[in-house]
Length: 212
Image (cartoon, rainbow, N blue to C red; front, side):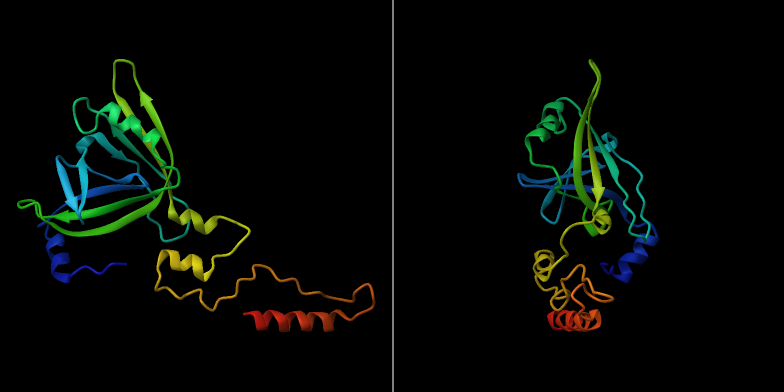
C-alpha cells in the first residue's frame, strides 16, 4: 500500500483538492487512458482522454476478502471528438483479451490542475468488449473487466514458482525457498508385496523434506 504524506492527507480531508477516476487499459498496441473530466490529463507521462459524463463505471466490491468483484465500463461515443464511434470500434483489432486494466483515484489542484497524488484503487483484466449501437442513436462500448483477485480462486495444474514471482517483482524472493510439490501421497497400511507402509512412508517423507 502506498503511503501518502500526512500534509496531503490533511488537505484532502479539508477538501482542498479535487479528485477524479483514472481508467487505464494496458494493451500490446499501447496505453489507453480515460478520465471522467474534460480535455487531456497527463499523469506519470500517460495522457488520459477526458470522457466527462460519457464514461460510466459500475459499482464494485472493495471488500478485504479474496472474492471476485468484476465490473463493467461504458464509454459513449460522440461524433467529431476523440471518442468517435469509429475510434471506439477499432478496439476489436487490438489484442485486449486478458490485458491489464487499472482504475486509480487521482487528486489534483482545481486551480492549477497539478496532480497531487494517485492511488491505485482496482486492478484486473479485460475479459470481453461488446458494442451497443442504436440505429440513429448512440453508440456505447462496454468493457467487461475481471479483478486480479480472481487468480486466488483459480485451480490449476501447477503452483507459482520463484521464476513466476520474479516476473512481477525481480526483487521479490518470497518463493525462493518454497516447496513446489502441490500434492504428496503418503502410503498407509501394508503394500501388496507385504512391505510395511510405515517403512515406505518414512522414506517418502524423508525424500519430501530433502526436496524442500
